[in-house]
Length: 324
Image (tube, rainbow, N blue to C red):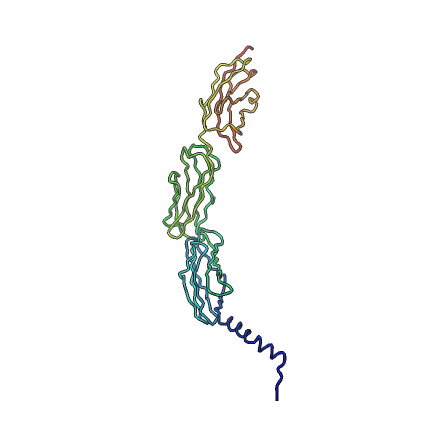
């Protein structure tokens, strides 16, 4: 008696072996499972090292090879490079992250590459909240706009959460910047005076100060702009005896001043109408006292102003004489 083969049996006979081969090949490949892709560390202080562990498990039927491990920054350390995980075995991947100066959240990534066919790279993330040991007030030393004359600013270092600042060290990045520490107390902190020396080069100020003890290190930026050591020759204007019916002009030389954008202001304001100012060259200014000034001793102050500040003040003196 002959048995007939139905359509389902024909399909199985034709494609069954291929199906079993695909399933078998898939199961035979390495398969990676990670217990978590994000790890949140405890609150760290600047410079403190936090540790975490990821569990890597191979659920495949062949060896899982970790060929290379990379991290997103130098703050993260993974003491492993090449690892082989046997089928149905686990590997504990230990990682460390060193806290930066903070405050706020710090994040770093670890990427490792395997022989898993469909996903050769896996990314793990480490996060931590950086809690500062000190409070810097203000957090930036801002000289704003200064001339090439000596200038100073101050900031205060205050320990937080009952911590102590033992062995406090304050160091400028630029050795020409002067530092003095006043009223230092490990429990209360210190007041720091920052001195910008004379003849600091004209331009933007970009530097920093490092504040540290054995437990932490933070950086305090120094910013500002030096616009030049402005002065005049002569540094005051004496017009002598002036007839109230005549005008008199005095030429002065100005140094360290860019005339573009400079405006003039006279104090007291009621005397401004008696003056006229004319640039003759790049750094020469004619100051003219017009006629009609009331008799008597005359005193005024000429201010040269830039967009942001007064760059120079020049006193003006005269004795006005006339009939009546």
